[in-house]
Image (cartoon, rainbow, N blue to C red; front, side, top):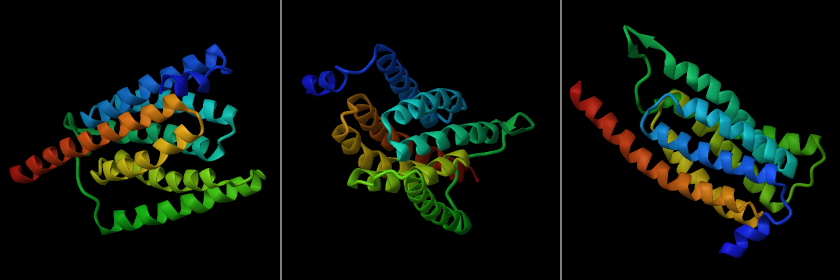
Length: 207
């Protein structure tokens, strides 16, 4: 296990190792803040996604780079949404998706898949088996990020599924730190789902 991590970074510059470590720390911190429904999830997440986008661009993983670029944009949007208040009370509260939101999520999932696939083709990237997994993960994560910005509990279900998919993908690519990060993301996402479910049930009981 130690050799797996060390060998993956033996030809990597110190700068890139430091950047990946920072993305690792800020990424985990961001998910933990999201679990606590803390708005700082967005600035911390923004730092992680910007760094990760750069690293993935350098590594040539286009699908993953697009995912993280979108995360950066959605972090700004989610930050704005979560910051909205009325009489000093947050406008958004944890809720479940309605029929229209579920439908939009499904549409967003498929649009994302087609767009990412199209970008691979336009850029003349060879689409290998692991790239198809990228494309699938893109659809899941794009939809999950949208639901998170709206404080929909279903976002955690999508994060869990997506995280489980990309853990072996990053390990296969030799990105040990990212693979470990997504294992931790999976654990945190399960914990966050249970926490948001508890909050949601308490809110329902109050009404």
